Amino acid sequence: MKDFPIPVVAWGPGSQPLDDDFDYVPMPRVEPLARPLVPEDAAAEDRTAAADVVAQLIESMDRQREGGDNPRFSLKAMAPGALRALNESLGQGEVSVIVQSLRGASAWRVQETAFAGVWRVLREDARGQRLDDLLEAGDMPSIVKDAAGRANGACLDAARLPEGVMNARPVVEELRYHARTYTRGSPAHVVNLSLLPFGPADHMGLDSLLGEGPVAILSRGFGNCRITSTQATNIWRVRFYNTMNTVILDTIEVVDIPEAARAAQEDLEDSRQRLAELLEWMREPA
Image 1: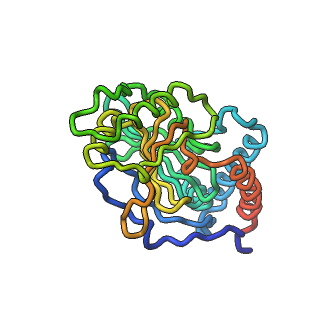
Image 2: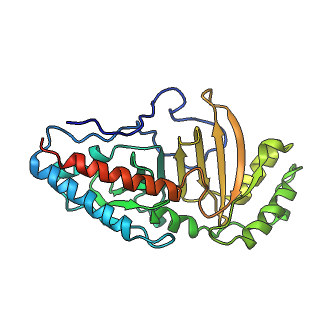
Image 3: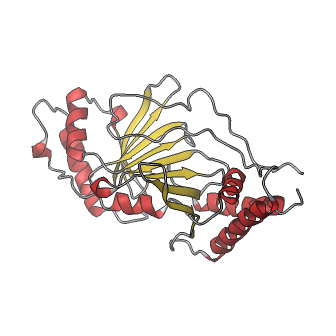
């Protein structure tokens, strides 16, 4: 069996879960990066079923127009052996997401595959039974976009900041203006808090005003990057860490989805080509 041509990214120091004083929502687990590998012990019918799903995905990606709905397929009815063959063939990539659901419902877990812009989207009940199991292609899964778009509970009023806040007030006014004027697809407006004379009271006051959103993202494509939505529409906390668990860049972005988490159009085009190579590999005689 020929080797599958895909870059291998090491999993080691700097890819482990990080703890700091700023995170309030649960972050995704760090999943090991895994290269695509068609299991040699998979039954022929399971390999065929997995290959058929990849073929359907490729066809849907070919028909997709930029800005249109993401191609998505339910995998709930897939046989366990075929699902294992598909998951191992797609591997695991750099971006993991947790989306908290409303009214106490089970959270969604999202894992990018080794093909940028191709995602596994899963929701389970308390017993570990699958409620939803999707394969989706796009810059970011629909469930993430929908959850972030529902955030509208924050009141960006600098007068609501607590006493002791010194330098957060102009930042609140800046965020308020750009959030109000932002249009989907526009470049992000970034406020670099690392360059500002922010004390603990400023950080705490700003965090309390923005609130906690339903989306938490861990991205290793730009180093160790944690991204959390807020209760303000189109406002995200984006923080980068070094391998010593130190924040090296602390920003707030006004954007629909931060660039550090989303797959670019070029990524999707590259993944489409590599999926075709994967399909050829999957259909080789075992």
